[in-house]
Image 1 (spheres, rainbow, N blue to C red):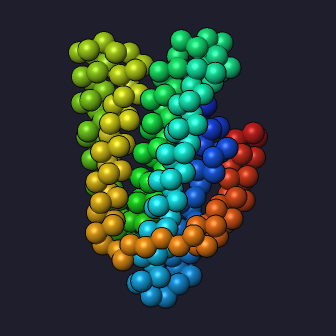
Image 2 (cartoon, helix red, strand yellow):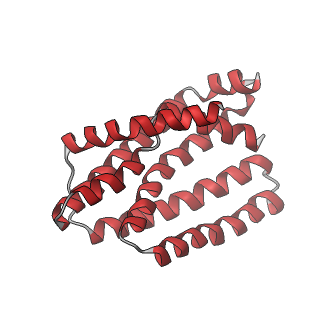
Image 3 (cartoon, rainbow, N blue to C red):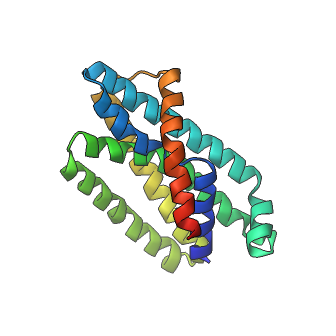
Length: 190
């Protein structure tokens, strides 16, 4: 069941162009000043957050229909809803991870990834074993760990850059990510 939900979310992410954060590298290193880099990071973070929230809103509003289509029953709409909430937190988290890679902070990247696991494992154990929440517990522990780490890293990121948003840059980021999204869809199909 979890594999089917994850596969469904991957397909949904492809439709919503969830590869936006990949454009960060190209645009980050294409500019020369810290102010311009802050604008690239800020715009990517803002756009990925907006895209994640929009995707989550669309996904949540259609969760019953998606559950019916994928699993032949609307009874799993709660599971899809939790997955779409995770989607909203994952996109800005990925942007922060790409930013950490761009500024060569591999130690902080690894520490953040480990922190996510350290939070997720006991939460999964508590929800799955102690509270016997089955699949819902696994999905909730992932949502909580992802959301906590996303908020923490976004706050850290914003405190370190000269945060600004640029609408024209956001359009360029989306255009850059389209071929990556199409390549991901082709690889998925294969």
